[in-house]
Length: 227
Image (cartoon, rainbow, N blue to C red):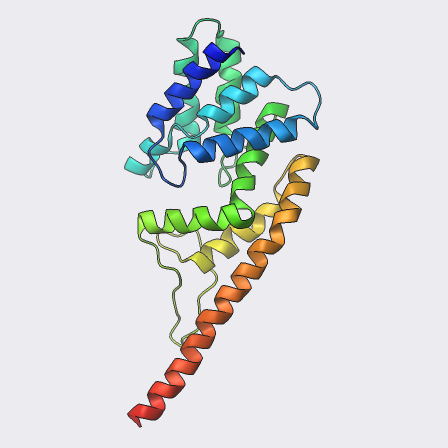
């Protein structure tokens, strides 16, 4: 892939990305992480990998408009249509990129098969690990209006039941973020994720402690005043 070809794919990606949690900077981080992972693998087709990384989230806008759609499936189809219209991209190569994109989603029963698909999957999942994963979760929650936490009838933070139409950060953490660390396919991604894991654990525990402590102290003082 030369610079001209790269710029054409990059420009198309820019036209499609409108989600703050899945913006162009997310794409570049995934691409750069993928190149890091790929340097530890053998027989990687970098044309396929780079194109798949650049285009893997171009279906996000359609999914955001219609939640019944899967951005991975839609994005794969969109990437195939775009690439086959470009000079030098044969249908077989474009189909490989489509397959990589279709298999990159965390919550979809379509595990990656090729080396390039596994690298894209891992690079994208690193975005759910560590401080970046926390920050992106908060951005997404703000976009869709999800609360930081939900309390049960006893005043305790609900930590289970994530993945529902509306769930809090604590539910999403226990549903997805803490479980991402055993989902990686490559040894390099596993090592990077391991380095990031304690950041999320410490933050989750600290946030839970601060909120719980505030409620316990505050309700005790309020009840004393009201009595």
